[in-house]
Image: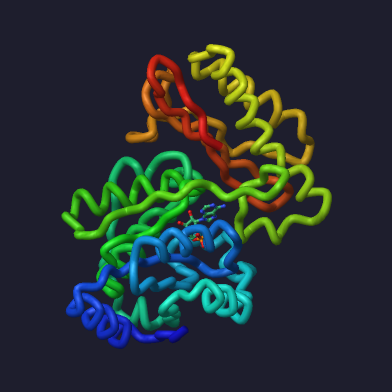
Length: 290
Ligand code: AMP
């Protein structure tokens, strides 16, 4: 697998692939790869050739008080995983390659970027939209693969692609979980043994909402209450938000009838974790997907 470090060389590779009428797939990541990332790679491999993964720890999506400096960077094992998965190339730029001195242009998706994750993490989605836009321009993918784990992020990327007429298909992949249900995340490595055990409270809370929906509950405050009850039972957990929102607008709903998400952001000790449950109409009923 080739490692590509410059924008110019990455563009050259993509230009050549497009000239040969090939279908380029992109899997953007921040590294510390786990099975969730690798599921995106596998899906991309089935649908595209060549497939490029990017590893870029984007400073612009971290606020000053966040975990950029201690974010895990196991580059050697990441390269091994991508090589084993037969990824065609790894785009691995330095920060100054993406943000040279004098960089001053940002993409901001209004509205969606201000809610929930955007409210708790000021400037986060501006950083995400900007770097994803740049990666699309540099790698020129026909399809780009994102995880539903970051549901608001992928919704914002879809909105950006629609609003700016980008010729890239946004593919949303299911959440990959540990055997006890915890959503895989690079940040799970921050958890000590006790916090790791406590962290299952997120999926347990989502399962409680799922259970209520299966029993016919449609009232969003009731579903939120069911989640809060589980979250409150875990002394190591501090809830940032636990909301039922419309899957398009990410505005709170009072009644679950159309496509919605139950969204959680919870601190376990100092580690902030997110997770969600997708709720979709299926015939006259609702179907839940963890
Ligand atoms: P990150 O490296 O955290 O920026 O994540 C890169 C991509 O992997 C994003 O599209 C994430 O949504 C996706 N991803 C992260 N964790 C998971 C997971 N557990 N299941 C599915 N996709 C994931």
